[in-house]
Image (cartoon, rainbow, N blue to C red; front, side, top):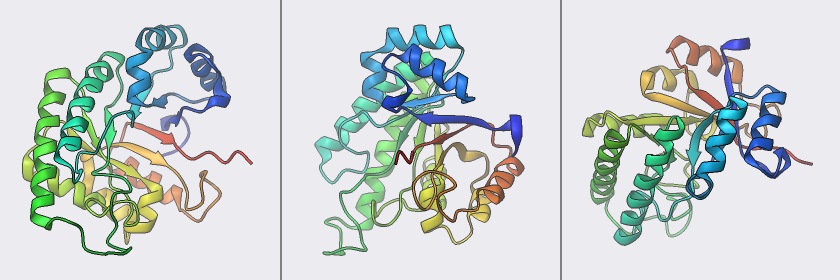
Length: 249
């Protein structure tokens, strides 16, 4: 995947400008083809964002965060909040033309690699909770024309979904048409034995990619992006790849 075939986006950063038209204009000048923002910003600034997209021709590529709770939250009420908030964000996501809303199972609530090592609920109950959340969000996605982008995180940040295959297994078990996989090179270089093999196995379920190296910004670590890009091209990936870790010093 080389040259003009790459659709490169980036997450929002303050140094791109203070208004969305400034941000998107700056990104266009730098050669980016999309901006990833959080859901709260999308809802609160929708009119401004819509005008900026029309004025610059640079789309909002995806939505990351900006909602309460987690879809795999231990607290059932917070899990319901996540489902409700993401459902509301999806309405705007579809209207703005973004690929979907990114969601891990959870972030930072538990790791099997850190004490106390055993999560507070059985694995079967956790899977049931995730399948229930994904079922409801798949329904939201179908009704809004959006998608949920399920993101595996590394073993230190989450204990439920760590590999692309974990995400794909849930999607396939539930038969969820509008739940896709978000592949993040930072997490993949920790969790996947062979990134290219995992991408091939996940195939067309991969709908969005995050570009981050083993040490922050791409190019500052040891990740083999060229091999990964070639594999993405092989499986027919046509979505955005968003830089989400910027080295500012």
